[in-house]
Image (cartoon, rainbow, N blue to C red; front, top):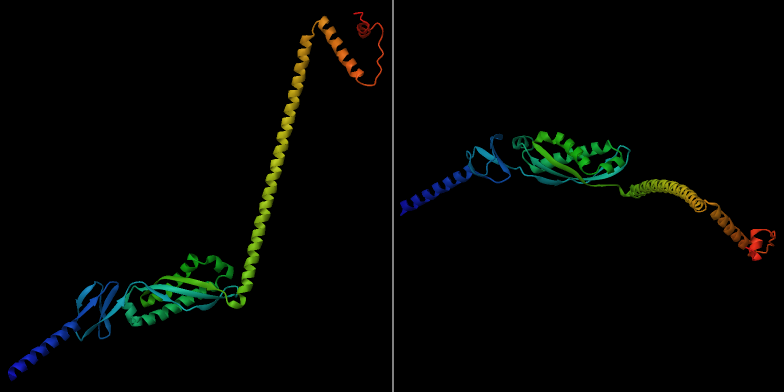
Length: 291
């Protein structure tokens, strides 16, 4: 019985030792993760494939590094523009580890240390970028232009740690409360001046169009009146030609003159004028029934 107990305890001890050796020898790599195999504090190999892997127990250790994109919200900070205007920049950063060995060697693969370096690099890049531009230029460049400048400048400082900043963007760029109202009033005044300029230009264009229209109308009317005068002259000439053709013999001409004379007598008779006729005139003979 004693031997059985001793044998059982020994077997359990062996199993426990084997389990300890097994768990000390294996490590797991997940998605978006690498494992750095470290021996006596020095990086030996980097495992990038996911799954279960082995290393030498008790002599080697593994350091897991997440290689996916990470978000870091940087605290807001004061910056000064080229024209000595104070502004408040609030940035956020999307970053990742691109060189796990360098990350481990420089920062011990500790995320808090990495974010401290990132915060300093982005702050310096933001400060330098904004200090080289006037306030109006900064407001006009908000968006991709300003983001690209800050991201590029930040990466130049952070690459030595095996890190890469995918995006360093200003999510809020505000004015200190003490001068915000004055800046807004100036911006409103500038917008009003721009609007007044557009209005004046519009009025000038409208007046020019009206003047052109009036000129074209005058030309059209003058051309129409000239054409009408020509048509009237041509009509009167045609009328006279027709009359001339109608009364081109002596009898017709005499009748025409007689009718025109009657018309003139009728016009005189409708007024207060006194008509004196020679007794031998054609009109007197008609009145006396001698014709």
